[in-house]
Length: 270
Picture 1 (cartoon, one colour):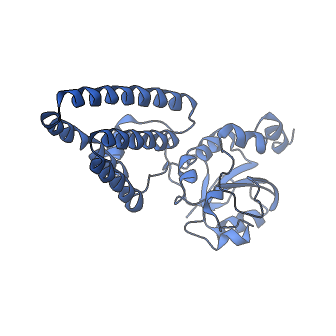
Picture 2 (picture 1 turned 90 degrees about the vertical axis):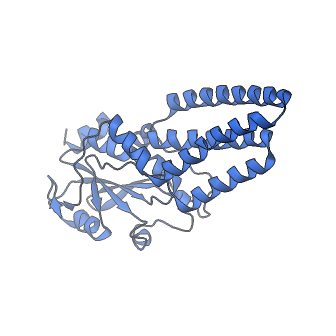
């Protein structure tokens, strides 16, 4: 355990927030989630080569036409997604989904037994492997519930704490895992600190901070504390768990918590 600049204890990995292609490539070939998907995707190549020798020329021509159409559609969707996305985790999740749908569709044209095999393979991967979240913490503090309560009650800590409550068992938390580190690097100062609490590790903390865990798709939750008092929360919880929650973006988080010049001037006493 160490101390931050404001005197609060936290666990932190000192990582520079930058994109390292070599590290990303090494991660792609070492994470089971990516390895399993790559193996399933590349299995289509030998299957397609074998089918070329068996099926009729007319069917080969039809299949090639469908493959070209699928490839073009996939490229268009990937370009649109990479332009609109705010995190690599979200981009990878969506493009993998597109690839799985298109591959299963092409397999259905070839043979419905092959399509069923691919559908089963992707289901097994979904059960046994999980997409890894962004690993860095930026300038935020990785806190336990007890550490957070201590920080909020101590008089020598930051006046404002913006805390993210997350659980990496949910896709939404994985897709937004890089947002909070980026915001912490940009806005962290002597009066405004950032912290994260993993409710997957500390589920009992949910009730303490008024976060219902009946539906995990309502995570992540962001709470702004001023002098140990909650002053803002996003998203708001309904009495009934919702199926489709609000889409969380970095811009939306800035707007909801006024992470702009007005708040920065306020916390700096101007």
